[in-house]
Length: 307
Image (tube, rainbow, N blue to C red):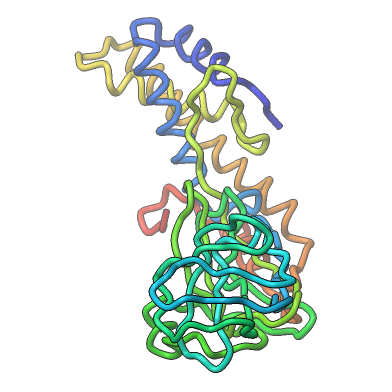
């Protein structure tokens, strides 16, 4: 396993290809870094996490004035955590999203209240949107362990078509990506959760480029493989005819890159092969299927490879 820094990798490439500019080497390293991570469905790019849904909040009563975005409460304890929650007044179809919390008894919503002015009204606030882990790239599956249910992926337009007034409340059955907040994915659930439940999800991690000298590569990526790939790319990007010696060195670097990548693949499959992963009551066979690639001699560099 490697923990070499970006600067150390750059220096290793420059020693072997001294005619290359450091900024170019940085690009070559990142290009090969991405190539390695996208070459296979690596087990080390797969992660699992969870979040907790929130119970309905309906403490106290609220006052709403027609045409105003300000809602005041009596015996309420609004907190900043309530921003983004969906608010519905008693016996009304309209819903509003909480924009800000001023105090424990005052908040603003995303649109002017369109109903008749009310005082001392009962209400319900639901948390329908949840932020996922910061490194989520692609969602694989999402499920609720306590009810042994897998959630179905949909989209917000389908949510709006099925429940435009957001009246469905209960155990979530669908999820949809709502938006990305500061680069982090946010999802919405339907029906809106009415209780605190654990939702687990499995995903593929984002590929993050190396930027700072102190950045380190993923522990599972072999530094020698990455350096060989960057060296081969550096020679190919020279912009001039290579000497016989340079041509040979470039070819050897590319060969060693491919050999090293295949060795990484076999090592990953060897570690993953004995395990069967149980997700929401169903054993998956994806690791065994991937292991058969190596046993059958499949290579990412064959003409019919999918990479």
